Image (cartoon, helix red, strand yellow):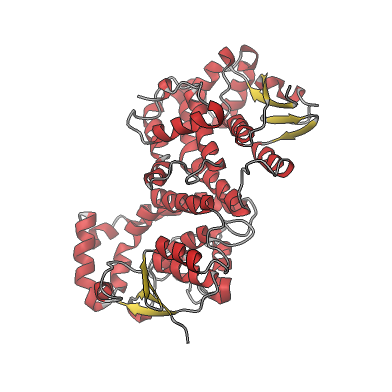
Length: 234
Length: 234
């Protein structure tokens, strides 16, 4: 019986799309640590694990509570130093942050805007009002108005992933080189998120990202393997 | 007397703008290896160091010839393993390649198009015909036609550096974290290149990139300190 629990955002049909939770699930799998996920609704997050955190992932390691995907990764490397490291060096960690910010700057915003309505359509009934209100306040229009400009935004989102394609063109199997690392989990987390909610394809079927994503899905006993990519691929 | 020589692209007034040569100069300085640069005109590159290489940087380490900035960095880490490493791990090297491709995808192309005419105006007289012919063939129009759309392209180039700004916003002094690394030299190389040729500013004076760039200029005895940034800053 495992003592590690990960609070994981749940939407309809028990899907678990959160890109930040994917990072934490991959981080635990990379370390070879057994864990169980605890599904949590968006509006229930403030009530779990002592009620001190507003976002998932939240890790409960035998009573030690850690939230935020970066903090969880750091915690795991610190507390389980003899298991495979998530960050081989401080520089690798810093460059993983560049990978995240680079994707935020080039792809995450168009991706979010393309799929926000799809995400809304997936959230649990109890979360729908909160999701609509908070997200419409953020974007400054209704979710339906946002969805109308989707075709061009999908092009922009697809183009915003070009840095990942170019890097993989170098021939290494993973963004982190010969072996998978946290940078791979960051990017895969974004794509698995979309794969679980999309009603319009983000990637073309010949996109070189797909072979890499399949490799990442198969890692560590197949932690991401159950996610079907078909809804995301034209 | 040093035995390491680095062939370094020379333009008017003995400026040395090549972003790839900057990486090699920083790599040597990071390793603490004394070296001398050998100025070389663009059209003279095929004649130097045995005549087997078409681009600079070319390193001559006591007769051992290495060209290409990545190969030079790898060579230095391999042959001088007891000096500070350029790549602390294979993953750090892989993520440095992501930094390069990310900048190529987001910033390098608009930057190149903004400043190609400025670069032409800087190259040595003997290189001008070759530069114009080869670059106009590449871009499909004259350098003067290209220069006409510059104002909007500068906006795009500036925005294309947002990933670097966002990463530095995390609070670390360098892209590589607490200590400078090859990722910093890649990005600084692009900016020092433009600083040495620009006739129109790339950055606003309050750009947070500037404090970081000044730190990189001061590294390793000030290898990049002599480059004035004023032409690049509004």
